[in-house]
Length: 281
Image (cartoon, rainbow, N blue to C red):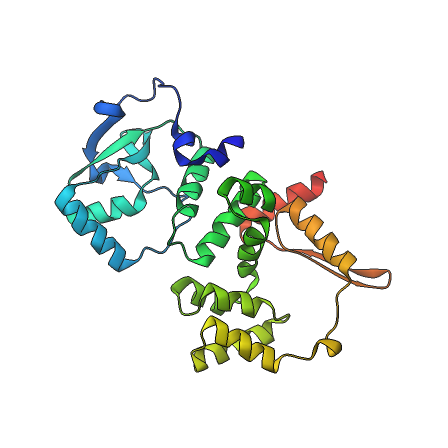
């Protein structure tokens, strides 16, 4: 786990093994048919900007691929660890071969490599980031603080980004495709119920608010502070403690000596991991 914080290059360094059987050129780079490479099924990135891909494809057509793809050997084929955007652009550019570097990697390392490479990209949308952080929490059992430290971000940034996954799907889709900004997404998160969030989301789209305009509008229409239900600070602290321990959103509803503790999960894998951690607690 400690190696996660050292970045993609550090994770790729290892001693040469007998599994690296492909012929190599300078620095361990070799050319292979582009059709022999399969994409990484653990790739967290799902959206690739068409204009950006076309621009990269034009560059590759002129200058070739400057940074080799990182792959593992899978029988007679290769599985991509890092570089799917370059692979897609190379396909568009009509390349028949691409440069690769072969690495030995188990399944967990493949996930880590793909996550780190994509998290470090500057053009990930907020939902892609949230899903990637959530996977680091669930699959690698890291805390929000650990993820922040290893990626050079504050713990609140990690926690607030993951909270986007609690928004209704329509709002998540809008964040994913850029119809609303991350600032507006955070403003919507300040509302407590799904109905309030959806209603305000529709108002934002209708009025075409900027982030600042959305916050001003919410401030004007919000319930006055003295009539709002103020949550117990002790419960909020307990929620934060549990969030750190289980790596997911936790909500405590307590009235007198009774109430509920709710833990959120966002995939089947996260559900199984969460159940296992609860049983071991």
